[in-house]
Image (cartoon, rainbow, N blue to C red; front, top):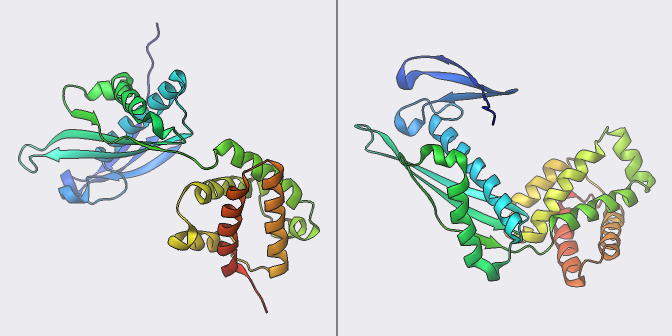
Length: 264
């Protein structure tokens, strides 16, 4: 048996709610202060948020491990957490913490099994145990969301697509001239296609178009856009995505690409 030690450093200046500081965790430096709704400066993260984040991160890892161990499908976990401070400003007690897990890539027909696992993860989470008896720590609503395309398939799609794309002289030379990191593009593309496949259509959420513009601050021609889309569709077919899924994704990509076109 071994005793482990974890260390952080805090630099602080100022009295009470007027104070602020910097929290150093490893190589990360985070500004911190009391929260604005409790009379503080609201700079950076607050102790309350750090407590919520600490429990949430431990819980999410515990839940993912548990789901994998018992054989329930999961691609990733999102946690929405709420922390409640009661009797402010008289006694001021951090009284309740509620975690609402969303199981991405789960099997919705097994909702009750996920809820049972979520409750067990609360018991097993050892950071959660640290606040047990002092804070009403509980699991709230458990959401299970199925994926149209799993992340592993999306990763395969993007890797093969960029192999094809880099064989196109225009795209390979453009990336070289602009000093573009293809590996970074791949990672962003994997995240973005996952969102396209498994969340709302882009025409319902203009933020998708804005993100596309930020990632690609240059225009392209209809001809080059067609090459890009054809290569993407060809790759989707190669990795055997269902035809309905291909049509859905290509349609979304086509709509997103239109604002980038220079048709002059």
